[in-house]
Length: 333
Image 1 (cartoon, one colour):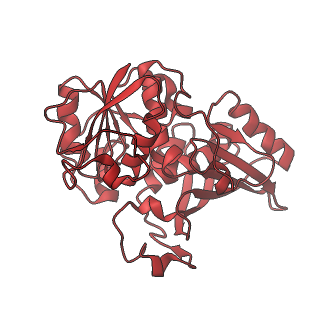
Image 2 (cartoon, rainbow, N blue to C red):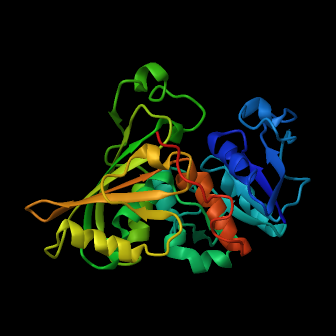
Image 3 (tube, rainbow, N blue to C red):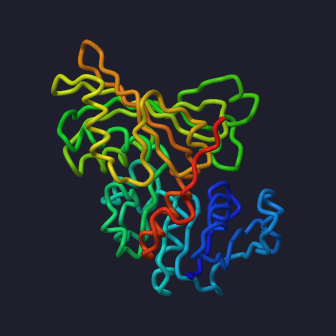
């Protein structure tokens, strides 16, 4: 049994960490922090967690844990993580602060000066499983990059494509618990909105990870759709070889064979099939007469796109079964 702390536990990703860890047989959550709700029962903020006795604490300053999840805003983690590591705790950071190999990329796309650069492992197990095992700091991937990278990776690895147009539709929970004019119900209900059309900060993250295998050019545009959870990603690319749908599907099946949380599906992935789960479904694989291939992936942005993947990383770091606490299907319909 290991002990875990969650910093920033009052948000959606913090709530998902608490929900998922509640069913983890090898982890005890010893601290959940929130400055805003310090002293209040966790169940007051997360009404679905009625069986926990935890109360929010203001900070982790007086609490030790084997592993800490920092579910904090971009720019806040860098002020917290170095101290946690110095105190001997291992960290899975859910912000963007440590995802980039070059801190200047972070500064350019996030508009924040990086005060405490540290060496971290990018926490996409399908690429970095071995490095994650021994890491003290894992940078949990962004939600959009998770679905996009997994949709494109086999083609990059096999050098079958090097240019991608990526279009993602995301649920409103991806914007976090604090409402904005874009996510206000009257604005997003019965509506679809493209935003950050050519300058979304997840673009260089996708490019960085795919380019580890072969240099790529890519453009990424997200859209907000009126659902609570989920990201449906459509990746368009022109293949360097003539392949049909069956051949394309076989490439993906071979690449992801044995991956516990990637399912190559026969047909079109749907958000409801992965809702609440840590699975990524990948399908479509259609090719038109211009050799344009279309790949579609579906994830739950709060689970495989955030908290579930963070626990998957924790499992790898601690030598647990990778599927511990996460091996359950989605909630269709």
